[in-house]
Image (tube, rainbow, N blue to C red; front, top):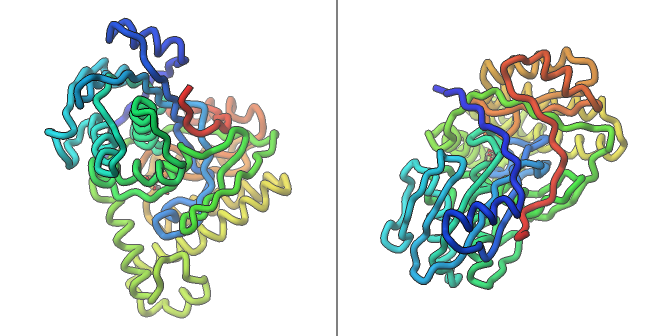
Length: 381
Ligand code: GLA
């Protein structure tokens, strides 16, 4: 069951964070980190199948201000979670999900320490304007922001793919979601003004310029469904099982013809999951091509086809999201829309002409609608 949550928009800056840190902890922060959320333009449920994805980082972010402590504890203060104040000792508190937001920073500290980075204790102030649990990678942003803050306090750096992998591991082991690599790598490595084409097998990245006439518009349905509750894990298991039955390492290695030939060998739900992955990989590359040619109508059609595939074949949409996609299709200037992220609620992403966002917001009524400017990946400011 979903619940309705609307995150308030906050203006966050380095100076504001540093001031608030000083007044809460009685000393200035040593570092302030900004890690953006992301919205995926296309390529969902392809990353853990070694496929392609095309996210952008957005101009909403999680910020962490940090200063080292003499002991090995983390003192966490979240402005977003009702000013909650909590102290954890990763060494003593150990591993495993607890269903609390501190799982992410605790997990990151544990994973970095287990990988022998010299991570000490720290005071951390967290603030964010990424809607929590809405498919915009609020968790990856928190993981990456914490990791960069702790590494900066330790005077160490880590190259982008390794940083993303470590944060992904924290999510697996401490939040209980067996996510792919898309979110963490987008948060780390995205480029302003560009979408990021990622080959999730090789981790090769190509930054794809977004046409200036293309607005990326997010509609937040307000419906939340925790990915850790098993539905996401089930998707992953089904895909792994389909790959095993098809005799390939990952669904990335299946062609449409191969899949057609195996129609009778796979149970229909698994076959349809596989068909989504195979067709979605092709759509990611088609969208890249359409954007390169400034062909926004074709780009929109590809996105809307992706939504139909997520809804009918992969079965991760829901009535609120489908409603937003249908409403958007009727708005002049909207080229195409789709569910974005893991699904079961969350947000849609639309590609639209400038100003169509205003019309879209009028039509969808209750949902919160905002334009996203493609932002740069995480930075120690
Ligand atoms: C979540 C996961 C990602 C990816 C998407 C679906 O956001 O964290 O790794 O699998 O769902 O594309």
